[in-house]
Each structure stands twice: as structure tokens, then as C-alpha cells.
Image 1 (cartoon, helix red, strand yellow):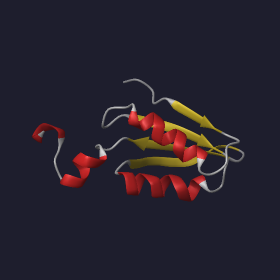
Image 2 (cartoon, rainbow, N blue to C red; image 1 turned 30 degrees about the vertical axis):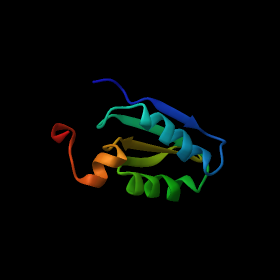
Image 3 (cartoon, rainbow, N blue to C red; image 1 turned 120 degrees about the vertical axis):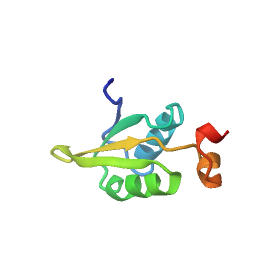
Amino acid sequence: MTEAPVIDARGLLCPLPVLRLRKVLLDQPAGARVRLWATDAMALIDVPHFCDSAGHRLVGQGQVADGVHEFTVERGLSAPSAASGLIPEDI
């Protein structure tokens, strides 16, 4: 098993941490995990909201250093497939 790549968004303000997360997730297959490091307090709200609205799963969340929050996100299905209720095997 390979370690989840880390997106270093320390020092970036909203909405940049979530935009970086979105960009990396788009290049990953469904089920892949990525980690995001962010110092912006809004990430505590934005990342879970993004995951819920985009069909991804927030696997873990915690503080890794003073002021640095880490989010582990598992990529969900693409929006069109998730919206239709189809799974990749159905396509």
C-alpha cells in the first residue's frame, strides 16, 4: 500500500486549500486517498463541506502541529456517476 500524497496548503487562505484538494482528487482514481495540510481555520469547515457536496469521504482529521490541520480524504465517484446512482461496473 502506498502512502497518501500530501497537499501542503499551509499559509494559504480560503478557498485555496479546498481548490488544491479538488485539483489533486480529480487526477486520482475512485478510492484513492490524499492528505491535506492547512493552517487556515476555515479549512475545518470548508473541507468537510466540500467532501459532502462533491461525493468524497473525509476519512480522518486532526492537528499534526501547532496550527496545522491534516485532513485525509478518499476520492469518491465522479459527479455524473454518483448523481446517477451508477457504479463504475455498471458503465
